[in-house]
Image 1 (spheres, rainbow, N blue to C red):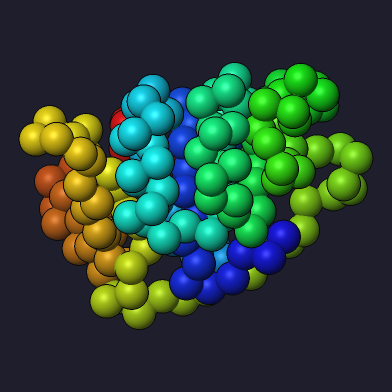
Image 2 (tube, one colour):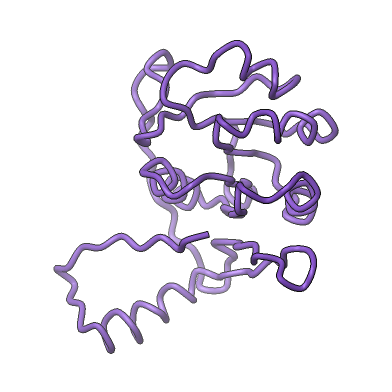
Length: 178
């Protein structure tokens, strides 16, 4: 829904199947996930949103009260809420003026919107930004660590193949813990 190549999408989710699906979908579109720790307070989340320049947000439904004032001050182009069923009216109200779309906790899309669209993954140039991870902020505010598409290729070649001994026939999913 409006996410294009190069857009930044702030992701504030716990480690769940939806987090993996969301990250892969964002990257398949050529957009850039900017991942933050959802347990941070208002100041750190607001600062990370501003520094990421994200136009789209994906947040954990149970954090609606935290995100409401932030979204009120800086409404995104689009908002998705990860929840275990239809978004309750109280949650919609807490989130403020932006009407959220639903992503189910298991990574599925809202059944009311129909089947998931197919996404044709983009080939990214090695120097293109493909992920922004915000650090824990041990020195004050979280810092944005930018990862480029080539970083993942390098890590695969050096660590996965060279150290772990993975083969082309092996299948794995690796998600950095926030």
